[in-house]
Amino acid sequence: MPALSPHFFLVKYYLPPKGQVNKDFLKQVFTNEKKLLKKKNVEQIKVPQYDELSVVQLWPQLQEDKQFTQYFPNVFPKDKGPARDYFFDILNTLYPDYLEQILSHACKQRHTVQDDEQRLDAMKISDDWLQELHSMPFTSCKCPQILTLTLLSLQARTGRRSSS
Image (cartoon, rainbow, N blue to C red; front, side, top):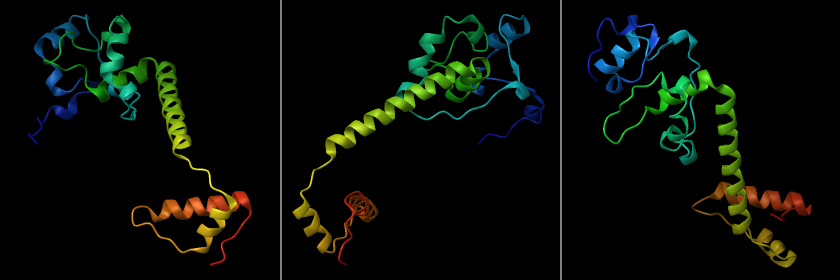
């Protein structure tokens, strides 16, 4: 890791990452074409690494919003957009309700898909087979906890206890 300048910690403004701050961006800041937020005013947030929450997905939707883009350089390194943490911190500071809406929608989508996939993977089992399985000891080398929890769940639903 490169050594930090002694002046690094004196900056009281929240800046894009080092690779995205250039002379042109700073000129725009100093002529009030672009803005910086004070660090103490930034609402930082950690956003899950979901595809639907990627900067690549969201940046095109927000590029036309002048209030939002005034905190970003006009030009980014080749094949790059805004840095993820900086992007979501600015979004959370300026539009916390919008970000909350996006996050809850993404989480809801994720959980719905997972529930559907689990439902498709589920197996029905007859009472005879359930009794037979309960009578045999079985340990899975891949996921013993899941099998144990599944059998306990089955027991709780059917009101049966294994004879072991």
